[in-house]
Length: 342
Image (tube, rainbow, N blue to C red; front, side, top):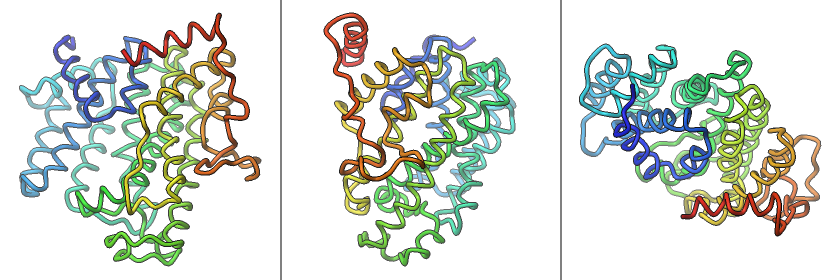
């Protein structure tokens, strides 16, 4: 059984390194929330091994990841509370060994590989680094229609990962000498690798970013369709995570896609506003797709460009935003929101 101290340490890791995901995790039911802290902490432990390139040679990184693999699969004992807790969770929720294997394989690939020729090549990497994460989350939620939910969970995992890549182009170059934008996308729009490495922004780079933003938004639309297959007590939290991650596209477009000069981020007030909006619409209409279309910046194919505001990829939600009323649902929602700032 996972112990309280293991959960506490895992929660601290998530709060420190994944603030956006942490906000969404807090609205999960306790039965899933504690397991999610442990999952996220495990992912971060592996990620930090890869990011230790300045302090550990590749051979040592590979050795540590293989050790982590054995411990996560229960083939070797560990004194790391996160790995001990993850191994217990894997058995309890019957998380497939294959998802753990492909996740660690993706971390190993990051040690050597820092460029991707095609999107298909990047997608194969993301099957381990992101899609497997979505599948593990579905498993710990104990979804009654898991088989129907899994393809959509895979799409959401990839969408989250791609949003991170698009947001962190500059950071990945500076800190890791990595470029996750596929070379074929860059070449299609006349962007050279040297241009990215030298942070030279122009209209060609903006067009390449827009192409990848649209690809990612299609994955969000596909992923949201599967939220209805999750347990009812988990649906809002997953929807909130999608709304928050997709909102990075708003920040990217506010910069006219110039992520070479700076790394955009969501402010705390913006996150809380999205939390409030999503919660209020959810109180009236418990349809994940309908609420996502109301609150998110992700456009849908039949929507035109005429209602878009600057830095906003979808229709302006401000036009249909309902102010929080002074009583009833509004009072309950506003009190609920305040709990996240205390």
